Every structure is written in structure tokens, then in C-alpha cells.
Image 1 (cartoon, rainbow, N blue to C red):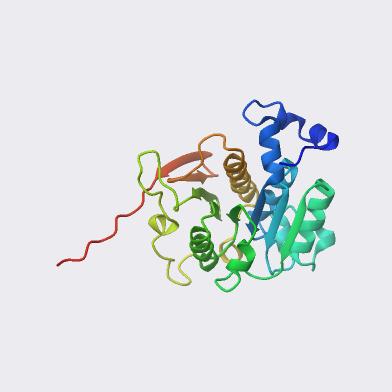
Image 2: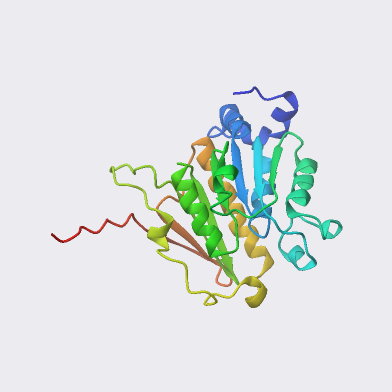
Length: 256
């Protein structure tokens, strides 16, 4: 691992003081490469907190541009970046926040055709996308590449987050669950309205996005218990968290 500079030691002092993290954990963060899919409502706080935490390399995959209606929740962007590519706006904000972070921009959607190129060289994937096609693509691609995936979703006043490592087994030797064990198939087209149709409270994306960043930090440093096999649900109006456990579904045995 590359040693921390004196500037980095001062910058991350509050991390280094934590026995669970320390200098070794901070070096792991510096050595890590994380791909963030989407620089919108969830991706914004994820990118900000991971940059502040000292992740060495952040990849951003997004083909959209900043619009005025984004600014109510996509806090990495601002009025002055309206019309810019979100990858550029986010990269500039990250550079202002922490010049030690390297940013790799993918100014295209994360699709089955681009997945292999986007994932190359990264240690961990965070899916902050806003559509089911991308969520399933990210889950399938991360599993195929044996990369941990942190995935979250929000809608109106509710959000959820979970962590996936289906290529590994739990302490009892059982295979960890897949995304499709939790959500077997996408809902019918048009059944669940987008935030542009139904609305969303802006601060909700900050809650869920920050939880996703925390999951990534835990995975990289090896501390705590990631949300593997657990879906964390948040009801903003009731100020209530709940956890739902899920498992790998057994394969059906064909009848003789």
C-alpha cells in the first residue's frame, strides 16, 4: 500500500483515531477503486462521502446532463453546472473536495454492452441508478466479475439498501443470495412511477446514499457487518428503519 502523506494524515485524522480503521484502514481506502453507477440523487452523496473518506479512485458512469430539477436532491451539482455532463460536474466537485482522489469518467449508460469495460480495474460497485434495467444489469455484471455490489433505491418517502456478494458463502457454507433472490424480476413497465412522475423528497436520497457509502467503507476496510442477505428499509415519514432477511433460493430439481 502507498504510504499516507502528511497532508492525508491530517485530512483523515478522525478516521485514523478510530481503532477499527486506523492508518491501515485508511491506506485500504486510498488503495480502493470504486465504480459508482449514476451521479444523481443517490450517486451524489455516495461520491461526496467516498471522496471525503479518501477512496483513491472513483469511477462515475452516467450519460445525463445537470438540469434545474436535479438540484433539489443531487447535491454534488449546483446552479452553475446546469447543462454540464453530470460526470464532469461531479468530477469537478470531487476535485474541490479532495484533490487526492482520482476520477474516471464514463459518459455513457451502464448497459450489458458497456459493463465489462466499466467494471475493469474496480474493486467494488455501487449502483445508484434510477431504473430497473440498470439495476439488474449491474447485479448480473458484478456477480459475473466477482465484485461486491452495494445497491439502493428510493421512491417518494421510502428507501432501501442492501449489499451483494453472491460469489461467496456465509459462515455456514451456504451461498450468499443474489439480487434476483430478492427481486426475481423487474415489475411490469409503467407499474412503478419514476420520481419525475410521482415526486421524491430530496433529503431521502441523502439518507440512503450515505448508508450506501457507509456500506462501501465497511467492505473496503473489513469492519462491521455489511448488509449481505439483509435489506434495510427506511420510512422517512415514520422515521423508522426495518430489516428484512433474504436467502439464496434453491435450484429446482427436474423430475425424472
